[in-house]
Every structure is written in structure tokens, then in C-alpha cells.
Amino acid sequence: IAPRGKSGRKTLLNPSEISQVKKIGGNEIKFTNLSKIFWPKEKITKGELINYYYQVAPYLLPYLKDRPESMNRYPNGIAGKSFYFKNVKGKVPDWMETYDIYSDTDKEHKEYLVANDEATLLYMINMGCIELNPWTSTIHKPDHPTFCMIDLDPDKNSFEQVIEAAQVTKGVLDDLGVPSYCKTSGSTGLHIYIPFGNKYTFEQSKEFARIVVTLVNRELPKFTTLERQISNRKGKMYLDFLQNRAHATIACAYSVRPKPGATVSMPLQWDEVKKGLKMTDFTIHNAIERVQSMGDIFKPVLGKGIDLGKVVKKAAAVVEE
Image (cartoon, rainbow, N blue to C red; front, side, top):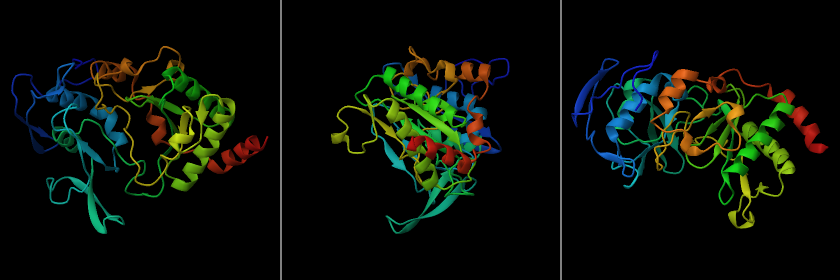
């Protein structure tokens, strides 16, 4: 984990004690099993993971604010079993904020955790949440996403082709006058975000993403597809626009992933999205230093959204060409 930088913060936990109590934002949290190995090959411990999230919290928390969290817990690290933990009713301290939602599937009300502060974030990590998967909308406008997203995942394709698809996607969006922001997924692909400012519905977001990937597919027909059925893709890369739906979650910016190397979902400048880029370029060992040096370059995705009406008219004309 990176030591404190010029504008950074020290690590929270000392490396010698396996159990420590810390007061964070007025609330005491007992951190346990800190010497437990979460990444066997790299010998990275649970304590190191918590220290990473403590150091990155000022940059990461805006992506969690007011968003219900779908927790996936890995109490024994990436080699152990994981399980989803969504309904926290009666299972977390009273000072934590929750959001009540009725589940049509289970025919019951569920309370989702909302990580609006550092203490809640670190409590989640202490429970074994390696990655953070918040909603793309907030509790204030649950049916209106903050951003539209395109997910580029290689499947059987090379990462170089993912990079090429991302570059073409940026070109399509540039032609439409739409700002776009890219990050590594931290797993195998790239995520491209377009700010929506919680102004439009999920259906509008999905339809806009569909238009964009249709134009991308038109330029890269040899190795991309819009075919949902895996058996019909014939080994081509799926341009996924269906993440734009209510209650869908995706690893947020600066989230660690439960993958070898302790990779991080890292925001990129577009000139970094080129041949030679690797998922393993960004891990909990260098992410802090990078974000302290560059600041939060992904911040605009949380800002003012595009004028979708104008953009769709322009896009429709292009699609019909």
C-alpha cells in the first residue's frame, strides 16, 4: 500500500495487530482478522485491503453516495467462497443509512446499505467486500441513472480488440458531440461512461447505448456483435448496452476486484487507451499514488448530463445514413 503522499493520508491500520478498534466519523469499528491472506499468490492481507480503501476513500465515496449497495462478500479472500448480502435489515449498526425497496421477486421489503460515509465503507470492507457494486441511480431518483454505460468485454477476443472498440466508441461519441469517460473494469474489459445527470430513464439510457453500439458495430463488423445469445455470437465481442437497467450494479471507479493481482477499476485518460494498456497496470499497490497525483479524472460522470434530445436527433440521422 502506498505511503502517505504530499496530499494523501496515512494508512489506518498498523501491520502488527490482527484486531484493531478505530473511531471513524464518531463511530467505532472493530477491524478483525487483519492478517488473513486475501490474495494467496501475492500474499496481500485483509488489513492491506482496508488500508487501501481508507486511503482512496476521499476519491471513491462520491461514487457510492446515495446509492444502494449490492454487497458480495469474500470472508476468506479470493480463493474462498463468496456470497451476496443485499438485505441488511437488522444486521448492521443503527447509525448506518439504509434504503427500503420492495422486491417483486421475493414479495418482501428489503433494506439495502447506502455507504454515504467512510465508516460505512470500511465496515463493508471489514465484512469481506473486496469490490464495491453500487446502483447506477440514487435513492433520490431511483428510476433515473446518473450515467449511461457501455461495457466492452473481450470474451474470446483479445484485449487489443477491446481497446480498438473503445477508441471507435469514443470516435462515435465525439462525432455526436458527447463527452465520454473510460475506465478499466479491473477484470477483463473496459467501461465507457456518458454523464446523464439523473435526467433520463433507464429505458432512454439503454436505447441511447444501443444506438451508439450499433454505430460501433457498423465500423467493426469483423469482431463485434450485438447478438445477445452467446451461441450466436460466433466468437465475436459483445457490445453490451443492457447494463443500463434499474438495480443493475457494476464495480465503481477505484474499486478493487477479486481477481489475481488485486487489480483496481481505474479511470483512464483517453490517450492511455491504446495498445500496450494492461489490466494489471493498476493494482492496490500503485492506485493510491496515481489518484493522488492525477486527482479524480472520472468526476465529470457525476456532473451535468448531456442534452439527450439533441443528441438522439443527430444520432438517428447518422444511423439512417
